[in-house]
Length: 388
Length: 142
Image 1 (cartoon, chains in turn green, orange):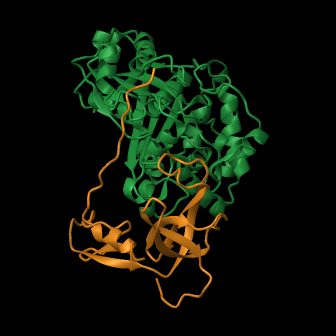
Image 2 (cartoon, helix red, strand yellow; image 1 turned 90 degrees about the vertical axis):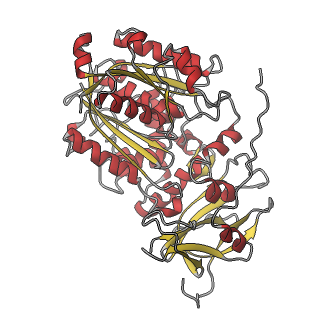
Image 3 (tube, chains in turn orange, red; image 1 turned 45 degrees about the vertical axis):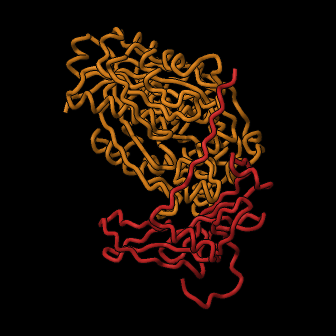
């Protein structure tokens, strides 16, 4: 298996992007990534396009995106894994190179979610489990799915709405310094706690926004990296993947995600990590809802099961804490354009590892970062370990 | 500009577990169990995903359940605007089967509370499972 590195990353501004079409949005990220890598678009051998679609007027969007970015004839390999679609794109680009099928590939993640109204968006997201037995009968929504995990976590471990709100406050504070974030302003704990319920116990400020955005990453084999003379590659040291049932009723509990536990175990093993808090400098985790970040602390083994609420309360996931988490603002405040998210996580981790994160830079000791991306409510899960 | 209208209204197939939907109309909730390997399924399925057998038996879910999680949905998705107030979705465990349903009433349930399940049609004619707090001692076992 060949070693694979990330040699270029790009990310559009996230938010309501009614100023651009889907392919124009993707192009913003691809152009930045190509320039960042210092390669010619013609050098790219394979393009992987990750996009969920449905909420955008272009229902089969991969080809228009691929054409606009100049990759006709070299892809698109389209992938979809709900909210982990971007990681599916990265994984596909990674395996195409590690297997020797390609030497240089681009993973493009893009989503436009704001072309339909909120009720429609909720009805689409509510179909991310099992349509007939969940949405059709009971009107599940995406916030509702995570809310069922939140209520179970609160009952079993005493996690509080205040602790969940603290995740939002931290991530908004970080996003205020991220020029690509959807929400670049801080919020108070009181404001988060007094926002309206979307799906009890989750309130408006527990939820990531509905955003448009794109991200791109250029991956290459070790030989290609040497040939190109790239001096700042970020290596993919570990990757883990898992999945779970579409029906929530076929799971044994609602206090953690099996996909996270299994994906992390595989990625840690591959990268030789047995103490993530000590061996990683920073983590980018899937905080589509605040409870998701709290469960991620536990399932990624940053703390024991049930201690996630205390982890945020103690400042363990903040700058200067045991392991800074979502220093870029998280999906919670930067935004969560489904297809873009996994690739945008790599973008943020690469910027940190290259010490290009400006006011949001953390101190590096190990030069290792983790990205954790979940699709659906733990339906898909990826963990990547990146190293400079 | 606005895009041209596109309406999706899927025609739902009968599926191999049509009996589940028919029995829901008779206040009966059915799961399946694989006769060969014993794997249990709710929602029911006609084929075993573990041993690939299609020799499945129907099992009725009844008696006392324990509520394991819930949410009260305040922001209503397209397709559910017929509900004029927040609705509560819960998952309860009945023996070795977990079932999703609507928890009746406006009050929030408590995790761990005992419930019983029944079926009814909602205003759009779709049959589903409802839960209510169990007040009487169970004579039947789950």
